Image 1 (cartoon, one colour):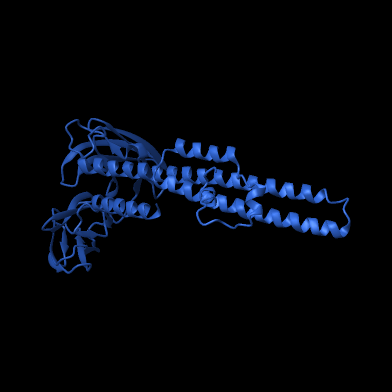
Image 2 (image 1 turned 135 degrees about the vertical axis):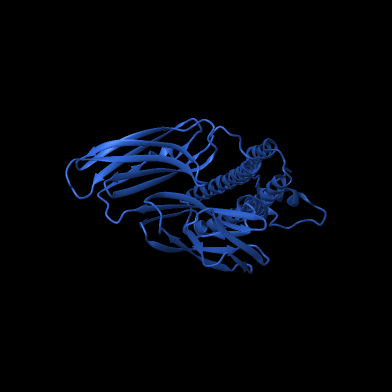
Length: 383
């Protein structure tokens, strides 16, 4: 039974690993690069690419953004080795705002895309914002609504001033699906709630909500990443297969646990019968011992020794019958006999008791060569 459980766990683990690995031949240590710099500033970041395949692989790196460059765009990796790639972000000549794009790591059988968000702000920021999106709006359906809380702060407490707030929603390919301008008067801070309707024909994927706050020569920025996805779409084949395997695994485990508990219950019932019989013999011994009170000390000692000897023989016989019944019960369980049939046998033994009579005790355990009575009794049969 235990070996079967281990084999099932290994097989299920192998299947799950096959699904979850998603045929990954390599891995990267970043799923998103989000940076904030001042206009005209340069910044260098790095990513690690690891070859998880069993053979030498060739990699290529490219981007749809003009303002980033790599210290290497092509390289080879042997199995289980990691290559660090440095990425330089140069904002020279770029207007303050929020820029989005992709870095692509390409291998012959797979491509991993890393979304990039670069926020460029002026050196002096007088007004800035804090974006908050309720968790239920982290994924929005096409034709649904995105609700955003935008809290605008007057950082230098320059008094009530009118600021221009620009809102945008765009993807990582540079496509704009929403834009709007709002005028706000801010003394210390103000909370603005935006309800953004997503166009019905919007493609599923990852998008960025962008806010830009402009006051004279000061520009502050903020951004939030969310997904547009049709929650009613059907599960893909791999996900469905994974869930089927998972459910089958649970069913098998539940069946094994149920079978083991049923087996333990049956063996426990037999053990209880055995304990009841031993308690009965113990009570009988003390009753007989109590009846010896009127005898003289010498006779009492002789009689007590005889009673004790018989009692020990009975206990030995009871234990022998118990071992035989355990063998029969385990054999029935191993052969997968019906539970009702096993319970009938238990009830039969319960009604019979252990049948340790004076005749069995007086023989002193000696057997005739052709007499199989004790053998059958030890196996739990009534003789």
